[in-house]
Image 1 (cartoon, rainbow, N blue to C red):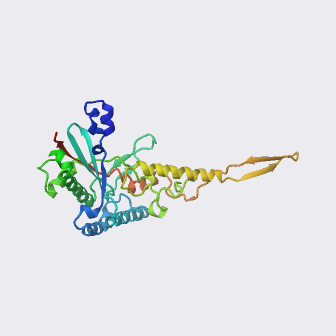
Image 2 (cartoon, rainbow, N blue to C red):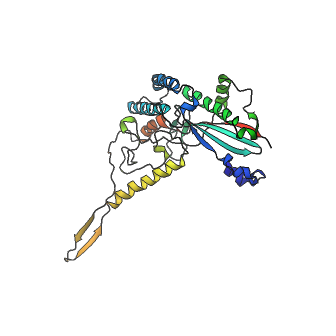
Length: 316
């Protein structure tokens, strides 16, 4: 990243171009730009619905299945809207090279997370399931094509030489797809393991961020987002934290003030903070194994974002 280059103290870190807009340019591209006929692509995604429900959900729990369907349908609707589907990022990570990255923003491939031990200190098992849904391959392929188109556009084309990676040997759709399968990686935006959804849709927390079935446990991080956003994850997570603080402060500041009278007749005022109680007292599926069942359906949604790099040698 630019921060890594800056911290290295290398000769490259002292070049003006490292701190230029070229090293931070970002664009979000919708389906109408990526596809000649976005409706045809959307129809293909719709046709995969039944197969995805049957084969891509690692749980037979009816609530989890309904939640998967709801997320799938919501993600599918964005294909026909002016919503970013691919993020393009320009960066300079090595001398005399501009990198153009393409990243999926709303993947249909959802990862899985499992509890692997009785110890809370042991890491969970994460399977991102990259490209388990064919739409993601097609979407990212179009992103790579657009990155190449961008490299040939004026005025940036005047500063670029020939493509160095993946290079001219990767050009057809099949060649791009094969290359993608070998280089797919994460954009480090993990979310969705404790989705805020109705319990009937396999949700883990309610709108007050309380875990279903527990009296006073809240989750206030990116794991509650059931769908991924066309944005970097930091800003919505900060927004969630602000909302969480509002919810908790409102609960305690609304506590009633009671007056009690002492035995000698004097009056003494006391403040009594009413401890919060759970708004949902359901007890089903509140064990660790049940929560694992929830998690496995919605986990690592943003981890399954993909970042691909196309590098071009800069002309001096």
